[in-house]
Image (cartoon, rainbow, N blue to C red; front, side, top):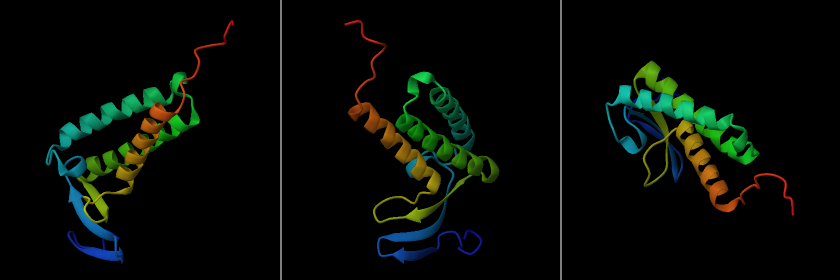
Amino acid sequence: MKANLERGDSIEVLPFFRIVHVTNTGAAFGILQGAGPLLIIASLAGLAAILIYLFNPGFAQPVVRLGLALMLGGAVGNLIDRVSEGRVVDFLKVPNWPAFNVADSAISIGVVILLWTMVFQPPEKAGPSNS
């Protein structure tokens, strides 16, 4: 699709959804434009933290691991674009929202899953009860 859609062009798929060709040298919502090296370092640090939590037995709940895995996959996807191209290609657009990509969606869904489990999942007991 990138080869057929010039940068800045878009195709309407549905009245509320477009495929666009936008590049972003910054972070989410276009902040930190041109800060590629800083964003690469931050991404690597974030990946390390996600991997530590993903393989930590204390975070063994399947839903938590799903959220972490989505965040990991999205971060890796954006990092590959950022290292190989110097920018991330955003191609999904809905009204009143900046363009985004599948990796951004995975990260966002992963964060929502983690927040959901922190708020609504009851804490696990530390060990067997002696009572």
